[in-house]
Amino acid sequence: MDVSSPFAFVHPSLLLILLVPIFSILFFTKKRHPSSGNGGRRLPPSPWGLPILGHLPLLGRLPHRKLRSLAERHGPVMLLRLGRVPTIVASSAAAAQEAMKTRDLAFASRPAVRMAERLLYGRDMAFAPYGEYWRQARRVCVLHLLSARRVASFGRVREQEAAALLDRVRRVACSRPDDDNAVVNLTDEIISYTNAVISRATFGDDGGYGINGGLAEVFADFEELLGTATVGEFVPWLAWVDTLMGLDAKAARMSKIMDGLLEQVIADHRQRRLSGGRLVGDGEEDHRDFVDVLLDVSEAGEDAGGIQIDTVGIKAIVLDMFAAATDTTYTTLVWAMAELINHPAKMCKLQEEIRANVIDNGGNHMNGDNLSKLHYLRAVIKETLRMHAPLPLLLPRETLEDTELLGYHVPARTRVVINAWAIGRDMETWERAEEFMPERFVDGPTEYGVGHDDFRSVPFGAGRRGCPGVGFAVPSIELALASLLYHFDWELPAAAGASKLDMSELYGLSVRLKANLCLVAKPWSP
Image 1 (cartoon, rainbow, N blue to C red):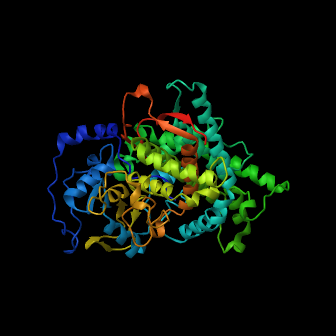
Image 2 (image 1 turned 45 degrees about the vertical axis):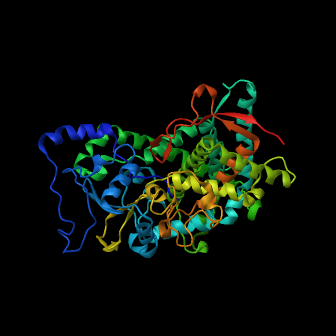
Image 3 (image 1 turned 60 degrees about the horizontal axis):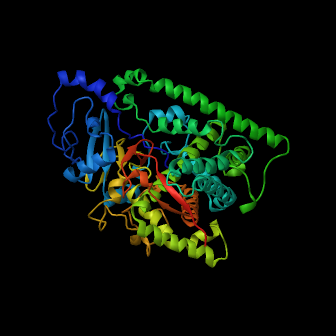
């Protein structure tokens, strides 16, 4: 499950500190021939760059957009120099397919990411380099945490938290039913929903580790820090800038806070097990949380297929699960609602499908059993993921050996970034690529991940390093979106004075809507 993009831009304030002295003594480098220094083998084209910093200053505040602009001039495979880190950027479906399928093994490792090493113990699954530990950790996640049976076991949690979300929205909507000032901050409500679902799935129902007591803010700070690139990662001799900007101190504080929380969680779970409170069950009756499952795997040892997960491994995997599931779910939900607000006819079409389905089944609310019949809902979510991939720049890969990409030579240990955002909006492969058109997915495959060799939209990646948690995130997205659209009609506040929602982006852990999504909710009943 993709967690964050360490390929995030370097903050402009950092660049200012660096560029003032550098521009006084340096000038633009002369562009070298693509094949120089590689025995005549052709490297990908590369834009002009600066000495020392290379192409870092080109990335700007929205690097996924800047990289697409560069790809339009230099081609779908480019070579950038991010400080001293050679980086290949792939921006087409053909390049993505070759990197994530045809030559998947050669592109299967991960580069060292300093912030991930500081916050995730260097032992998590998402950022681990290709090797035995990664294979074991992924196997634990796929077989024990993210299997279809495990996802089904959290159906009760999803439905309870969706009901709580509706109650919170209803309280605001009914507080002043005739007043358009009764505006719902849907961004905050969706974040609360996603935090609650993953908190209960990870820590359990009764451990007191939920979203109360400031834990939501702690995890938000954790995720923001995890998505922050460090100068020292790209220009080692400028690592002092990270200290100057306070990143090292923030990472140390956050690591201590998270480690203390996880130690408490694991200790409480172990104490409960010793006291005879160990949870067992099967299928939907299995109410073990992620920590319970990981403790079972750890204690089983060789009986679990030789997989050895110690306490540090448990903490690292738990943080992976939490960060990934929260960000993917809430950003997709917010973007979906934003697109539907700007396309009211499509919102009405989706509401008609949802409401007819609930009424035909003799119910008065949406539940997980109804979701499989909502084909247009699935198309809306797929179109949202195409246009607003939660991680527009997929977690970087690193080549294990010398290889090729679309005929270009890619040396071993080269960082490789796939621009999923640019691929999803490629005008050469998508008709009206910049328009929100869910209808394009109505008659397509039902799965959300890559299938049938179609790499035109890769929001979850593919191949060995593809996101294994799609099946966990999607039911939470589907249930919340269907519930909100069944019970309420939505519109922009009259006070906003605009007919369309501002879709400006904010780049961070993921690319999210820059402003909070504040809407008027009008309760609906059949």
